[in-house]
Image 1 (cartoon, helix red, strand yellow):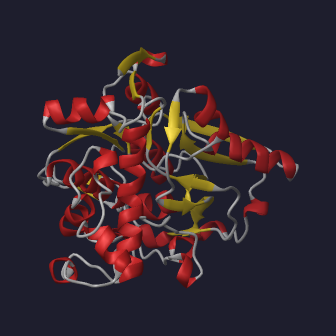
Image 2 (cartoon, helix red, strand yellow; image 1 turned 180 degrees about the vertical axis):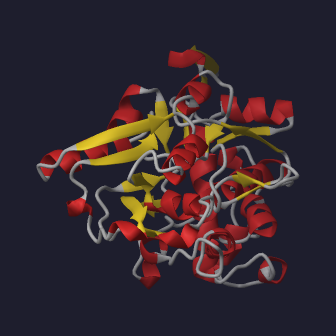
Length: 338
């Protein structure tokens, strides 16, 4: 027997006793024939459009993977660029189905905004960028500096905490749009640019002379970045997080975009369950049993999407570091499919 409960923010939560729960958001997405994914307004390596309006990046690949799991077609995504200030309202109001937008998982966001952070797809931390000719080698030398950042982000509080803890003064110069922050820093309206380190490496590419700027060594916060959905729709949250977990397990098991068809014939029980040749693991998600196969065929495993978008061979040149698999000393770890 199904009962529909209207939760906070007008989200429908469908519960069914003694069976597989239904996901209101999944039903909406299937009915619409398109996933609405909230992304940044342009952050290279994570979510960024080219001149033709084609989006790419680590966060974009997660959206594509979810679309592939649902429709068997990674192109069925509408990307909705959102500023840091407007992103949560857009998700709460139903304008987007999820945020996949370099957003930090914090306690207040998890408990006060009606949101649910289901997984971390990039472990990060806040840093600082300065001009080489300033002669600054440490963030502890920044007392009295004018600091550019975004409004509506965790960076403002992190800066306040760091400077207060170290008895330093500063002037905050904040803007709503990321490109406004970069332009202000590039024009010399502030001495320092601060955001998550991944964002610093990405935004540095937009400066007039990127090589004239450096990232200071201090990392002043924990910034676990990941997708957010609305609270009260557990099946939808499961689809989002298990899309990421499937990409991690694929990397751990050696399943790639190139060999996934061949690997469907593997006798390894873990791979058989991952690719849907054994078990019924798609049914509880409201998906076909080859849901993970569709993800990997469309976007590859996590290692592939990391390397393609932000890795050492890209302009960002980011090492795997904390985002390596647990088997390689990193924090990325997929629960078992069983």
